[in-house]
Length: 107
Image (cartoon, rainbow, N blue to C red):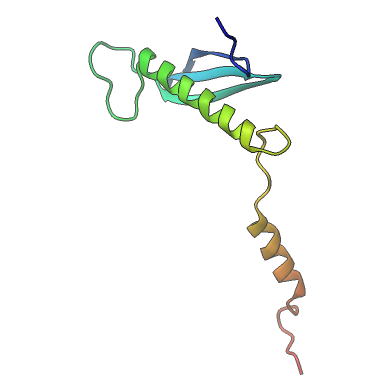
């Protein structure tokens, strides 16, 4: 059997919080290990209410997260999936520094 080009593994963890049980996705893509919140866990029988996850639903979400991470890693030029700072935040800072101080008028 052929091995995938990037080795990624993961599992779903159930963690009890004050707000109730939560499912977390823990996966490794290459050398980077990531833990992300999936959402509130539904541990009772029957269909999970909107916004809650059964174990099977959490595993599907884990696989979707891992696929998204693989795509982001391929698309980034450096191979890193870290987010770059927003350019809008830096442009608004530079616009404020060029404006005259408040309370003064230009002649």
